[in-house]
Length: 293
Image (cartoon, rainbow, N blue to C red; front, side):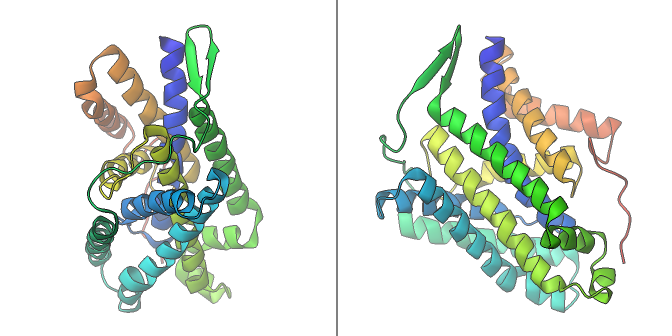
């Protein structure tokens, strides 16, 4: 029982972490919570579904389509909902409200396009293969979700640390004004941030759609709440913290359901979140927040 739940926590945690990474990237660079991130996640799942069902693409190609489509949607979201407010030096609350409005619009568009019912990937999208190791059962979908999520997380960490754009992104996260004085094109970096953030959301949307065999216009809301909990738990703007917290939150949920009750799934997870924040308000790997120039 323990090892089976550990397997469940690992693959679910990888999806939570991947989703939260996009959340924390935007917060790190812009100091705002993009509450339309869940809607982009949902559209990514639909992009992947359309690629499989309408274009007859294999799932790996559909994943790339979903990431590209979600990334472009993220850029449009920035241009429409956030950039005009940045130009006017609007307060952070205005940006949060704008993101809520954008999320509502995106959900409504999805509902109009696909209906409110639950959609699913075709059953033959991936082989229904199950691996067993003693009492532990692992499906092929779980293996692929965990492995590809891990690859994307490592790729993001390497991008942030090794590439010029990644280093520029970290510089803008420290101070947009100083970065601009040093010759960094801050607007280009913001566009890159939204593209990468949204592409990760699109990938996680496809993964959850595959794993739970359920895609709907409303699938983003509960995951968005979990993603918010993850970035707070890991430390706002902290990429390694988001990864660690994603696995921790998933483990709390999975073991809570297994050993307590599924009725308290969310309550247990958020109780742990509150306890951690009482001990360490900045999150597991976070640092004290300072006002930046």
